[in-house]
Length: 326
Ligand code: COI
Image (tube, rainbow, N blue to C red):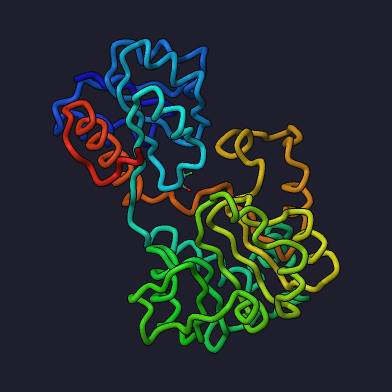
């Protein structure tokens, strides 16, 4: 069985090789992204592993012509995959899961860094300014944190924060029993009005776009911090910039941002990145920006590769797999 893996980074190569050997897969890896120009690299492959590049109908049709039966994204989110088109072409689509602690720990780190004004402290240190001007922080202990979205990552964040002595509020479409005795489920309005920190852990699905719009940002407490390690489109970026510029919000930590696709994971040193909001936010001393790295640990990357190849193998053999999306 032959599988082609696209957008393979050097740090993934050895893990891919080991997983392919274990699963008896003939593997072709390429650092190139999957596009119409690179579609031929998957010729004669039964499965294709991709990461964040949009996978649209035209590309799927070309792959189908090459004999591709299944496409797996090495991500939890699959908003970049056209499931309808894949269904019509008879292509099986799948995603993966990975340890939720990776994103949960990054989220808590981002909260602490915002509260302790670490970006400003480190910028000052770089400039050999060791004064204490405007860098006095706040403790996480005793803060009220609002968790929006209580799936595996939201619950892991809650469990970590409970050991910090935070009061936890939660809002989600359905209640997760893991939060029993740990967090109180409330309406989104109440959560926004009472939380010192609001953290988002929802997928980007129709209806969740601009969940944090101008009205909802205005409902947040004066000086509160917004953390988004989920998906960029959940936040109206312009409204967030307004809320930070007016001083209503005390800070933000963004691992994701609308329009990040052509920017994140590329080197723009000495160039002007095409998403203006990124430069505006990066200039703010109270905004922590990271390029969608909350997922990036040894543990998570191993899971991503193993589950992606396992699910492609299952699809090619006509077996079941828990990650099939269609
Ligand atoms: C995901 O797995 O959904 C992520 O956000 C990580 C990724 C885009 C590399």
